[in-house]
Length: 511
Image 1 (tube, helix red, strand yellow):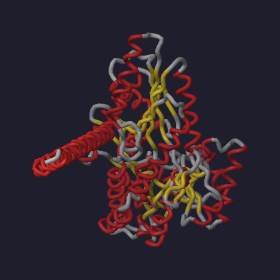
Image 2: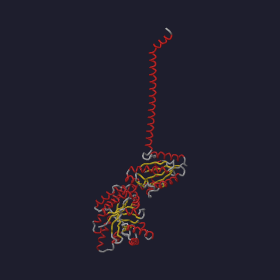
Image 3: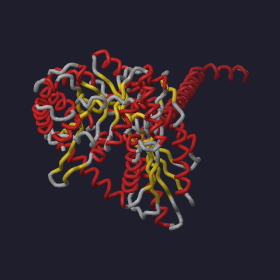
Image 4: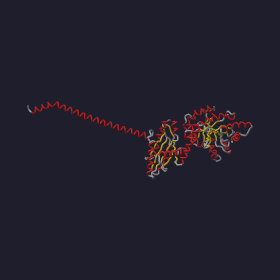
């Protein structure tokens, strides 16, 4: 056997072993490849889980630190950033910061009348506008609802904060288009700064909030700087709000009635109902004090209802006292909050039904400024009241900015001249203004009422100008319910003996 033959034989003999080795190696490498694929798959899965966990963590951080509607820092995050600014000021006395606290004056009205989706879009647009007017390093946050805050830092930041507030107020004078509706917004802004040694973010926001309320109570659409004296003022205001809430719940507020007369004949034509508050400890609290508190706190709805129901019942009693009470009307002031209240019409009709008055016995007075500020909201309500037969009057006429086109189209029966024009009636310019108002009203088919008539000269001049009706201390002061009824009874008795003119008799019976 040759060497070649023997080699072949060995290979033949070893073939099964070689095949087994090759098969084992194949299986080994396949297993290695499977292990590698599995390891890669596991690594990919771990990476995906890590990415998912990271995204989840970022989402949680956004929820914890960002406002979901606007994407701005929320109250919690703003507190942290403000705390860091306070700490920087404590480390370096030269470091300054300022805070602007914004609250929108009509946001509740927007939400109530146009819906929450429009309100949300309004807030989004407002947040974008604010961010457009600040510096890159300034922090804009939404604290909740319609409250926003801005943190500014650096030398001269107080002057910058004031300039920024003025820019923002100017920006807000430009109407927004939201869901096809033009919205005119305004805000009250409170400002405080590190000039007061703050140690806690909550104190800073509290004082900025107090300053904002000072701006709101001063007429809204403006800014106010915080000073330490405001803390006492606001605490007293909050105390009064609590007292007013309790007084309304207990029915402790009173209503007085100021007679209105025909200036030509002296005949009593009706009364204006006026809310009064006699506090057991603080004494008489002026309506100029408690009515703004009622409006800002939302208590004005309850206050209007109290006046509305008592006044309607009072007029009904007067009407039942004989001929002197027939044809009298009751004038009641309504606020911008009443206009925005969806149930206002039903509140009026319920008061009329409970008292037994006819709609034409009631005159609702709405100031010119409120009317123009909330014209779109007021129009449907005014039209429905007019259809019911309720009379309507524009109060404080001449102090607002109504146009002739509005006056000619609105369903008002009368205009009430503001007392400021009546008080200075002896001045030629004011007399000309009153004469123009009377002429305008008559041209539009509306009657004129003058308020604040305190002298005989004013009375006679208004008669000469052609003003139909008036009220004021010259003729009669505001009266309690008991004095109204005593006046009516005394009037009837004095009439039987021919005792002077009606205005003279009213004055002698009332004063």
